[in-house]
Length: 437
Ligand SMILES: Cc1cc2nc3c(=O)[nH]c(=O)nc-3n(C[C@H](O)[C@H](O)[C@H](O)COP(=O)(O)OP(=O)(O)OC[C@H]3O[C@@H](n4cnc5c(N)ncnc54)[C@H](O)[C@@H]3O)c2cc1C
Image (cartoon, rainbow, N blue to C red; front, side):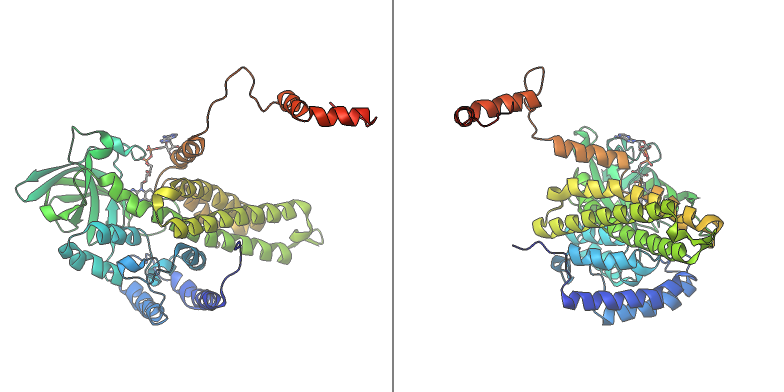
């Protein structure tokens, strides 16, 4: 039987290297790079590209890719341990070539792109030479994609796209966008949409607003509100079959969600480590904060939440490796996705409280992380939607009970047991033993 919580020595060696590399090289760079995804920023390129080269030399580049995509097949469990280390940094995922949304978009292109699209977009994307955008959410509703209004109409050998998209992250830097649009208006909603590769320079794409979010400090908002007006793309830019957008989207969303969760473990670990250090360093009324029972409760509660979440993430990663089919682990991923924002909000919130005024100041990152928890509760699907999905999966196959009271009430169970063991009870009574019931 194998049911272990140990890391193989050769994997641990790599993780130790990553730990030191993150601490010594990536964390300092994070202080200077405004947006690690911006390939047009000379400071970013000067600082990040040499680090990417070192990751390649260490053979740890784009570890998320399976062998079918030319990767090493690192597996999600190992990736979880790696991503924990990268997750406490902004630039880490870009330095290791496994950043969202590019990692998921690469998977879509690999599965559904034509040879031409693979050559033009997938290869430079995997190499880290370009970045991409996933343009799905619309301003009139994100949680219910069946209400999307953007359309694509085939005109000869070109598709013409019209509509609006909202919160298209990194559209500002992207070389191409993956856009979801209605192509089969008369089909059932889940078979009415298709997915397209749209080069960012295509005429008709208008940046209505550069939307920024609390918690991110960049000068220009990177979650674009986009308007597509008569945007023409070649017929071959259709990804997968007509009407298959939902299936195509699932190719990226499963991996994307669990990878966010892996990185969040690292962020929460970071907040927790700082809490411990402050608790044993700061004194009040002649005692360390660590000696106050209410502070001890904060430490204990944070560790319990962190470890529960980490185990759920690792177990889910292990199940993905086991089944190699995201459909079979959809409920597990929903559970992780729903748990993630609360763990981060709770632990980062306690870290603020424990650090006092310093904790709420912009001299520590906790306020940003609390906001980040709200990003996590929305991006890739609202928490409520994931909880609903999870509950539906858990309830599926559970049969209703007949009768006014359920058969598992204790009087019924006891009566059953009395019937089953009637002979034993009678014999025991004859022997003069006390009989309960
Ligand atoms: C940081 C960030 C980055 C993002 N990046 C991208 C991106 O790159 N590309 C992209 O396409 N989108 C992106 N999004 C958008 C994201 O996918 C949507 O925010 C999300 O799908 C929710 O849609 P909405 O914002 O329209 O909220 P709505 O659909 O309006 O929902 C609002 C709230 O209503 C409640 N609600 C909704 N549905 C249900 C339900 N079924 N049951 C119970 N309650 C419900 C929930 O509380 C939900 O938060 C990003 C979002 C964030 C925050």
